[in-house]
Image (cartoon, rainbow, N blue to C red; front, top):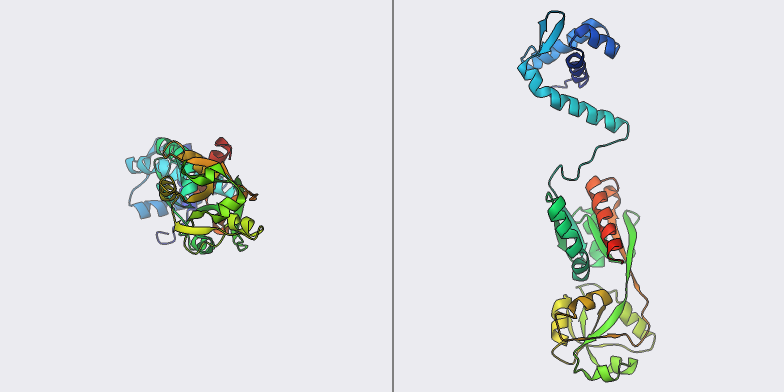
Length: 301
């Protein structure tokens, strides 16, 4: 750095500034007075400035030295803290975009709590969110295209870390006029027409797996990628929509719909938070993971 300038020279500079004397600085650093003078000589040559001017028995800093000393002291303290394993971290210090992989269900749950707090307290942190299928999860985290993904529990490699967030349960949503409302049985469910919300290439569906246990399947009349569109559709026709309970409740005041329990058992779907091992010690990533967990706890997920 800068022609391989020895960073220890700045330790000498700080000592001379603090002590106001080359002799006292040498004693404080446990080195000889000529060594201190030599160090100052190299810095004077580098900066083309005398740095200190003798005033009686003391030396006083030049205006240039006064201008850089605060940065020098802060940098030395940071390096010393690092060596002690204590790194100062201020989340508001630098701009940073955090890339999240969240389905629209989870965006609607997490963002109304998370984003207003970020805007108010850490406006330097911006969030970019997109939906991700499970085959994309590990490659996107490995390539640093995404920092954190929250989704259903899926198999991953050793390089992917995960932490349990919550469980999703499911309900049936339909229009109040749907004949299913009068007979919400598993037989009525299986013969009805359904809307299905599913991402491209996403093959994980616990509802169909549970229904298959009864040797039944759904008759899919509409498949799309967003629940808002699906709920809007089923509120106006005779389709059924099976969706996460919490998300369905959010639509109850927006659409004229009925929310009914499933007529067969479906195991709750575990939802996990994922990140790559290279982000284990990324302080912003750690901070955001803690923030997301705090939001989940606050919402009672």
